[in-house]
Length: 114
Image 1: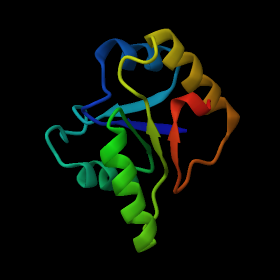
Image 2: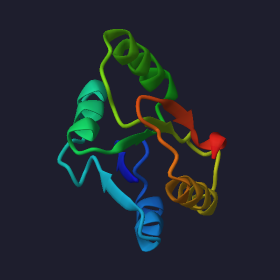
Image 3: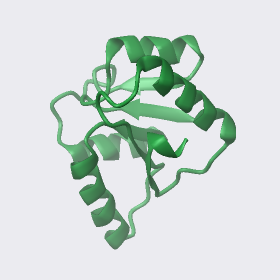
Image 4: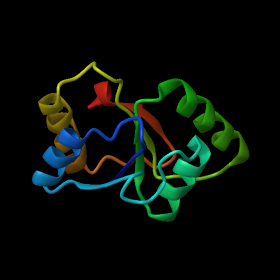
């Protein structure tokens, strides 16, 4: 499973920890996408075949609904609420998700699901 972290969720320590566990992560900074709107972020994730990861639950829930109504496909949206989990807990949950082979296609999920 490949992940794309938007600007709201890409904390340096977290990204380094995920990469140290061989989780395939690209950030909006890596992709030159910082300061782009949410739809551009989701479009970028789609082009690169990645699950979009964000802390921005409200905006991405709304965008998810719009895309569903329009029949647009994506590889999934994963919401990680800011300051709810430690870095270690996020890494553990994302490792569990990555190894589960869970199909996130066209879904909106919260890290608490994993």
